[in-house]
Length: 342
Image (tube, rainbow, N blue to C red; front, side, top):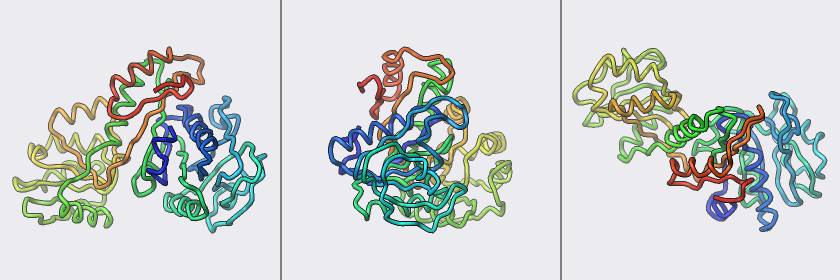
């Protein structure tokens, strides 16, 4: 797995589709490979990770073991719970409910707990600091059901962790995973001029329609939620793009389809694939009906890791699960890191 990122990317996020989907196993695998290759990593997290007992589900979970030379951004209280010897290099100005965020370097290996900054801008800042201090790459471990750290403004590459925890039905797990892969991998808008215009609209948190002459009409509403009918009234025969600054949800698309047929002539532009909040069956239906979605910033999804075991006690046959998942996701590597094959 290290070869997927080594000398290619400097910030990599690991995001899980749910808690216990295998994020920590993926993180530990990368750490282990980096140690063997004498490739110094930086590690931080959105949320808390590394505890031996999951504080939400009260089930055992993998701990994080780091060797000498690893860089860590964590909170002061988590530092006290770690048995690795960590030299503090910087105390940041960022505060969390469990202490200030510090950046340190491991002097003697051991187990650590990681709880990084709460804001994405702060995550980006501590990652950049660790890179300046000597880390070759920084791994950002994501929080429960939160994909925002996959956004390309935060990380250059993303690894998605999924597994049996999503459902007892293997086909359902594969369906949900494929949907997430597809939405995270939505294509970027190709027209450079439109991209510049749309970015300014989104940065201003406005909703707008762009016509075939690249003229912009700002729609005077604060959110697209429950406003699909209003948006539809502003679509004309000359409209080519609809720019939405926030989340893309089912109700907005449903209202557009029911109110006007002009939606078939436009492309909807959103910030990136983490902004899609539409379930897989609805998404497929919208695609069949002619909804087209593009993004300003394409997420670079480089791998999917799978965990065939659920903390609830059920599991899938690992080889069958891996084989089926790979048959549906063929354009990026799919790995069962415990099984030891791709």
